[in-house]
Length: 144
Image 1 (cartoon, helix red, strand yellow):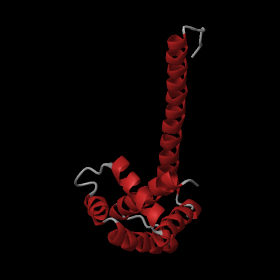
Image 2 (image 1 turned 45 degrees about the vertical axis):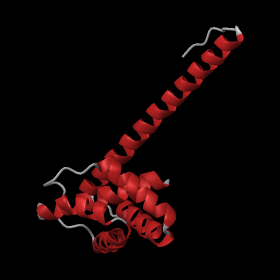
Image 3 (image 1 turned 180 degrees about the vertical axis):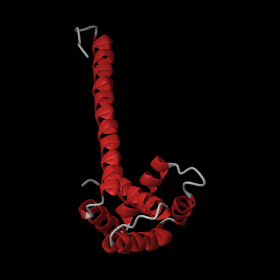
């Protein structure tokens, strides 16, 4: 799993665990323990992100910003990256239907965004080719 996806899954797991507990449902002990370990690491690496996650859903969480901050922290701290990976792996293996639904939605959203970005990258390349062709006087028909 790539770091961005792991970061999104880790945050999603934390938020889903919090939401499930509010409704009286419990996640498995392994997920609970890995969530606590991850949050402890997060407190050290990105206290602002930790506070924002703790305040959700009472205060809106900028999920994208949180994911990017966690991904950045994981790139510079191998122990934090390990805690993030362990949480994501444990959550995926949990077998809790509601947690699985949340994690699948996160992955689907990321995949859709990556597909859109890929299309935009291809479109930008075509524009670049068009601009270069125009500066050389050669313009070829390009289909998008």
